[in-house]
Amino acid sequence: MYQLARGEAPRMRALVAAATGLAVAFAVVLTLTALGTPSGGTSPKPLLTTVPAHP
Image 1 (tube, rainbow, N blue to C red):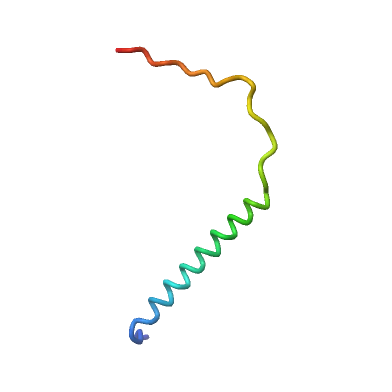
Image 2 (tube, one colour):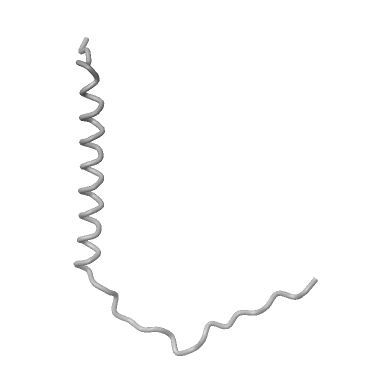
């Protein structure tokens, strides 16, 4: 059975997991930036809401 030498493997695992998460987050940001803003506009009509009846 493999024995950990002075607890170095768990630290390395955590470092690899953190680096992987950072790389994925960076890739998502770059992808969304590359897509740009959606084309479209706002509605000319205002959003009408009603006030609930007072009990």
